[in-house]
Length: 165
Image (cartoon, one colour):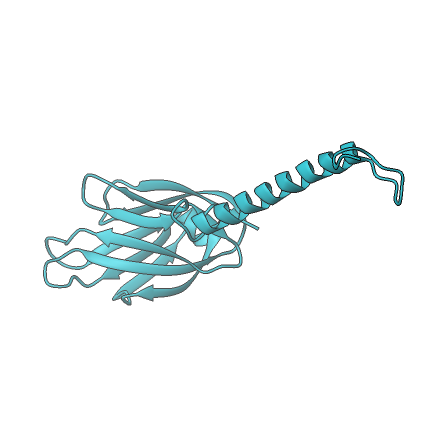
């Protein structure tokens, strides 16, 4: 008897069904492998698929993750151009204020304030170079969020992120 033919003795076998189940099993392995690779690549946060950098003509730039998880700590790195005089000013829009809980800010701002329009931070310049501020946050809600950041009263830099539940 050939190996790929159905048998009745010693056990009933349906080789057509067996081959179909093997195909389904291999497809499931492939799907699980693709999900694992997508997770490592950043599709579910913290990876190269998620990382993004945007900037304005005035020199303000922002590094952030487009895809985040609600339970995970995330960071926003803001590069603020060196101010002509005084401190570097950053404003985070009101949507940021409602959507995120700020865990830490490095370096510490010299002054900060909040109002209905958003959060304002003032950073001391370091020797005429750009100021790099890192804001560690935790999302309060999930879904798509449209956020804004601006520096020293300049045009706002708008960006969108998605927070997984």
